[in-house]
Image 1 (cartoon, rainbow over the protein chains, first blue to last red):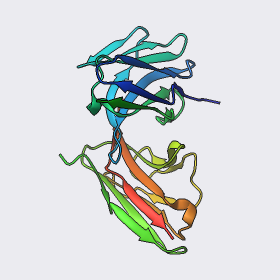
Image 2 (image 1 turned 90 degrees about the horizontal axis):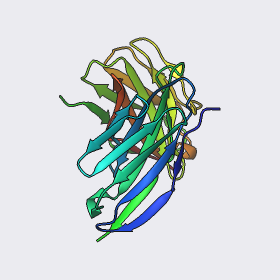
Image 3 (image 1 turned 30 degrees about the horizontal axis):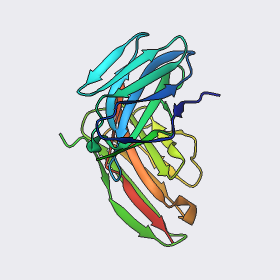
Amino acid sequence: ILNVEQSPQSLHVQEGDSTNFTCSFPSSNFYALHWYRWETAKSPEALFVMTLNGDEKKKGRISATLNTKEGYSYLYIKGSQPEDSATYLCASDNAGNNRKLIWGLGTSLAVNP
Amino acid sequence: NAGVTQTPKFRVLKTGQSMTLLCAQDMNHEYMYWYRQDPGMGLRLIHYSVGEGTTAKGEVPDGYNVSRLKKQNFLLGLESAAPSQTSVYFCASRGGLGQFFGPGTRLTVL
């Protein structure tokens, strides 16, 4: 069974704190790992797509790393701001799955001012 | 480019009524998807299409039908709506590696 697990399920931090979340995914037939940011009442927006073991991506204060051999990815937010409050989803793209993504349930982040 | 659009944005149905949700994309993407999103359940794939004229079942296809007569459009139909189909429905299309999502349709079935 192909499954994507995210932890923690939810997180409350203070403005200025740095934080990180974990995504574990099936490493067999790995093709790509996606991170999305999903604000309440909006639709998911792509943050990163990573394909290579050891990949690191960065967008402003948000960065992500990828370990395809052990099947995990970390998302880091440096100096959290209230506008970072959202659910962060990861999804695994594995070969042979007909280009369907396997979605995690997300980590819900609340940043208190 | 409008990206991915969905109509309608909101709809209230009575049990047993039928309706069609329309998804349109102007990015010439081959792959399109319909998801539903329910509290605590994450995104669940209903049906998807790998190209014009093709459709396939996802995780939760029962009670839904789809059609992809034109590459840019992917229609999701509910023949006889049930309260269990109350949800937010998202359409997405895929070009390259990433999926691009529409704004969602909030459907309530009474």
